[in-house]
Image (cartoon, rainbow, N blue to C red; front, side, top):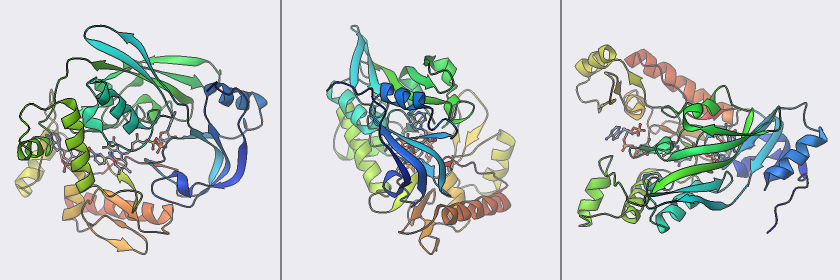
Length: 346
Ligand code: FAD
Ligand code: NAP
């Protein structure tokens, strides 16, 4: 289908309830859906919305709306996969930013291109993945990232960002900080391997493979096992509103880690390679502080996953944020640890 280069329709006072996985009924002052970069540029050139901030939305699986959004909310549906380079060892696959992340993983696995199979079933779009350098089961997108293209809202030029320019860190990137709201990520390119490097050491992957008698796993086996583990552990946003992990896992210097390990010898902990820092699961602190399963009205903390805040129905973003603030204060008071929010708060 030819790409439309006409400015898309814009809706006023539009409910975002169906567009964020927390299911918060916030309203956007203006809302539009774009299926091509050209159509968004046409809209920008009308100048009609240039007095407002533009908030880009993918699947809404990493946002919490705490108020109505005084902005033009732009839902990205720029689609398409293209193979842009191939040799004996690898391919470079370009994806439209509005593709679903998990569709990209399935596409790569079907072609036996390795590198992102451990990231199966993460909700949301390809374009949001670089925002926080999505990660799971020992892999982050930076490991397979080649480059991306993004529209500079000020100059209307499409800029190419190499890996080093994206400043990827643990659930961090340039686009989550200085670049936030200034660029629309339109395409992302990944370098995937034809000769798979299988990673099974993280979480329960190896145990589940063993239980199935799989001794020589393919990347398809890995993605299936990851999907199975995730489905068994994580609440499905279609059933209970949530945005996955609300906080990041804290990484602390060794003297802080030693203090914690002396006081609480049972805490799971993960040394950071190439550093003396140690990572601790935020969920452990939250659970020990007594928050797992907490509920106040329709806002709460998941009964099995203390790191996941939930909306049981009609909670507001403010109510969920209030619980998050109380959790932060209580973990700080009990353990001297400052939890950082992972979800983007608006
Ligand atoms: P949105 O929530 O729509 O947007 C997130 C941020 O990115 C916003 O600030 C938005 O403005 C910005 N943005 C979105 N698209 C663009 C664009 N094209 N250009 C510029 N800015 C943009 N995350 C992980 O890292 N690992 C996990 O394992 C994981 N598991 C999850 C499990 C569940 C059940 C849920 C609900 C969430 C999970 N997440 C996980 C969080 C979330 O899925 C990811 O952060 C995902 O990348 C968000 O994608 P999205 O399209 O929904 O982004
Ligand atoms: P888990 O396996 O119960 O482990 C708890 C935490 O310990 C994880 O968050 C993980 O940190 C860390 N961890 C476990 N094994 C590790 C290892 N071998 N080396 C270093 N760190 C290790 O976690 P889970 O909650 O079921 O999640 C599984 C994976 O999916 C994790 O990677 C997690 O990040 C990811 N996930 C992310 C979100 C999100 O919204 N961001 C939501 C659900 C799941 P890391 O988080 O640093 O990997």
